[in-house]
Length: 213
Image (tube, rainbow, N blue to C red; front, side, top):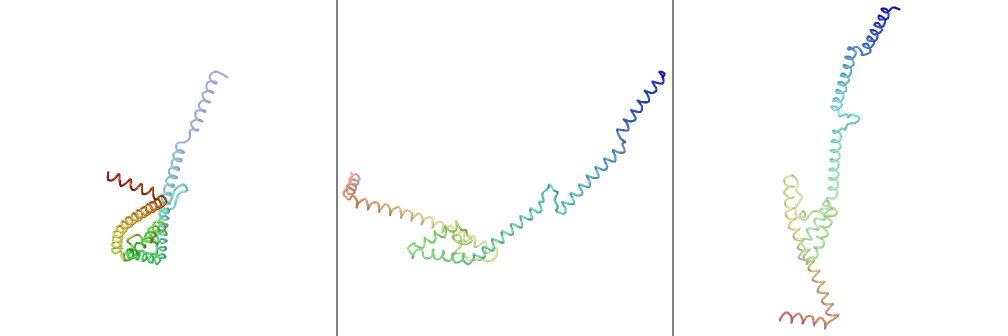
């Protein structure tokens, strides 16, 4: 093989290699078709997600807030219906206990304060059981009034009367506490005088002497 033939063969192989590389890089039209396919698929996914959100459907990893809100409203409505049913069922018993509380206040003086024991029991049961059965102080004097305006006025009147009754309960409980303390102190003094009369007389005399000095 001559020198010219060898050079021509090397040039031909090099040109063939370059053409193969150019072909391996791909046709630009193929890239355009791939980009168009990916864009159309993304647009289809976006339309599907919007349609699902309008229909109230959720994606596999999403959260349906409309369903959660409807479920919360349903539970709230069920709770309100249950509370109304319980209140209606306990209404006769509550009315009777309110009448007993009202009678205890009315007969407080004539009974020499003994009915105050039931008032304290009623207040305690109101804090433990609840006002569905044991009414708040002041409500026993307020009649049941239908209508939003009448109910609001009755509630205000009940709170005003209840404030006075709460103050009266506090004063009477403090008076009872002081009475118990005074009674125990008096009993202790009597027991001390009976058990040691001469020592008690000596203590009393010392007190008088120190007072008049």
